Amino acid sequence: MLTERDLIMRLIRQLAEVLAAVLQLRRGGKREEALVRIDQVTGRLTGMDAGALCLFGGPALAGVQPELRLPLARLLRARAHLLRASGDIAGFHQALRAARELVRSTPRSERRAGPDV
Image 1 (cartoon, rainbow, N blue to C red):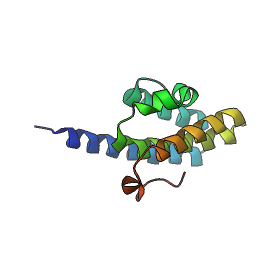
Image 2: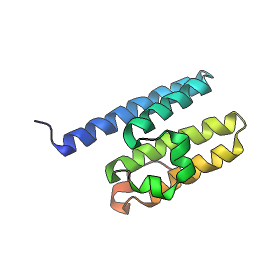
Image 3: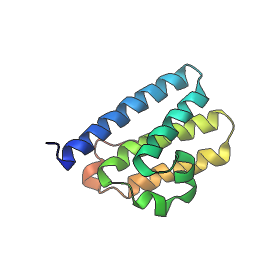
Image 4: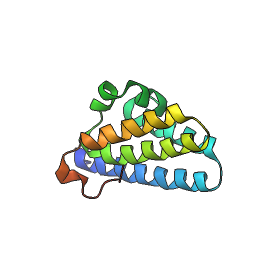
């Protein structure tokens, strides 16, 4: 029987796999496909795509489980860089702000292996 911790660890591994795929797509110049992948995973985790998550910020981000905040922040940071590369500066700032908010809402003791947002 799977425990809650097992499920969270599985989600974190899946997030890491998606992040690796997104970075590979980004390197290959497939920005739109990478953004779609990010939207898909944030939709599964939070019920809203990454754009909505970044737009609504605080209230939407508060519902993210603490264990998923750092991996999700890393994914939103990747989204920010994809948006900047495509010329969407407002979207870049929204995504980066959301990623930073997720990191700040994570206890320091859990940040040590987290992203450099």
